[in-house]
Amino acid sequence: MARLIYNAIASLDGFIEDADGKFGWAAPDDEVHAFVNELARPVGTYLLGRRMYETLAFWEDPANLADLPAAEQEFAEIWSGADKVVYSRTLEAPSTARTRIERDFDVAVVRQLKSTASSDLSVGGAELAGRAIVAGLVDELQLLLVPVLVGGGKRALPEGSSRSDLELLDERRFRAGTVYLRYRLRS
Image 1 (tube, rainbow, N blue to C red):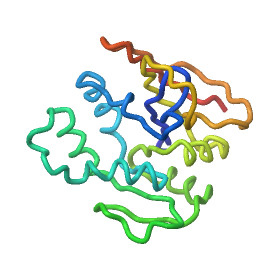
Image 2: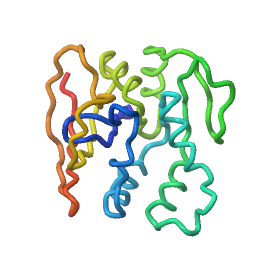
Image 3: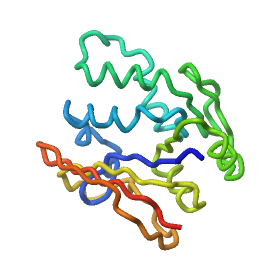
């Protein structure tokens, strides 16, 4: 069975965007971006909320791809090669290839997708990931914590969910102070 992984870049105080909806402080440097590529490489399907999809759609065909750093060029290739499922009630049509829109997040359908997928799945967007965590669908959390405190905004992990015990599987520290933590959710 494929794993469903929640991968997020967050501030040290646990936010993926600040109170103004900004996340420029989370932009990875080349070292972290290359590592993110290694995390993304085994993902065959992204499950995304509309806002996360609209943010990541940039990588489908960046205008100045040849001028971007190698890690960013590589991420564009990884992104383009994966399937995307976007959960949105308002998005009319996808702007990227290999993309379909679903109006509702159906737990049974995602369970079936996990059981039949030949490669891992990633869930992106804090609200969608929160629903998947609460539903018991997420197998791993892969968090990159940036050395910044933003004081408020959109939380990386859901509030009000039931207790989940975690097992630390991996950790890594990067030169600029970002820290990677990989956890498995225990049954």
